[in-house]
Amino acid sequence: MSSVPVAVVTGSNKGIGFAIVQALCKQFPGDVYLTARDPGRGQEAVAKLQKEGLHAFFHQLDIDDLQSIRTLRDFLKEKYGGLNVLINNAGIAFKVHDTAPFAVQAEVTMKTNFFGTRNVCTELLPLVKPYGKVVNVSSMVSSSALKGCSKELQQKFRSDTITEDELVELMTKFVEDTKKSVHEKEGWPNTAYGVSKIGVTVLSRIQARMLNEKRKGDHILLNACCPGWVRTDMAGPKAPKSPEEGAETPVYLALLPSDAGGPHGQFVSDKTVQTW
Ligand code: NAP
Image 1 (tube, helix red, strand yellow):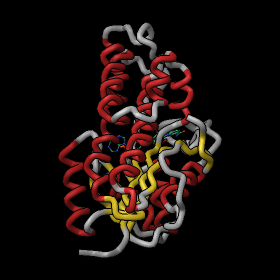
Image 2 (cartoon, protein in one colour):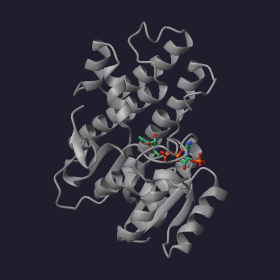
Image 3 (spheres, protein in one colour):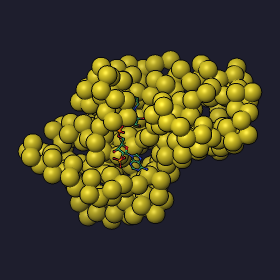
């Protein structure tokens, strides 16, 4: 078994994930795994880094596929006995002009952004080693979507006692409410991406709390963040930040020094803790 530190970035064949891997290859003292759901796109990205003189390893990972997540989990357990840095970056967003019915957009977006990210956490968090770092890439849109929720929902999402099961119930209810076209009446904002990212931010707050309760002595720091508005296939060419600039906050959180007491359980943007 290798004792070399290891970092894993989900959805890193392009965009912000690729820039995160690029930065970690330069700054992380260990093995960096670029993962992609499509092995062809993943290997191509590794080859692109190689041309820049950077070395990343590749492993297949589709966060929508539990078997794929478990294969990566078993590989990390066997080769490294766990992992040191996990960056949950993979995500999707329908384009504004997409004509797919809102209920379909809600179900598909929630499946990857919330349930896929949660499944990766369920399988990989127990493997994170002491002093490890976990970064869940959310979005400022989670904050604006939160403000668009009913008072009752806002209270639930800001609660310091909400459980993971209760959050899963709420995310499932949103999708069901869109199918019945009652989501606005039920207090939800009209954004599937925004609600899925509320899920990612709140999940991070819950997971950090669980780490405090169950693994206090392990000093693991877990946060959600926003990369900013970044020029990628998702956000388009008009966004102000380059992918490298978008990678800055996730990489900062992934490389917090081992004596850092925080941030932990926070929502961070521009390397600054935001009020939730
Ligand atoms: P992007 O260029 O579209 O890249 C998304 C990455 O996620 C791609 O590698 C994609 O793989 C991967 N992915 C999607 N579904 C996946 C799945 N089921 N399993 C594994 N990988 C999957 O988007 P981006 O702008 O870099 O976004 C990265 C993260 O930042 C996302 O979580 C996004 O919500 C968040 N974010 C972005 C912005 C922005 O302005 N760009 C702002 C706030 C937050 P394929 O190539 O196979 O599709």
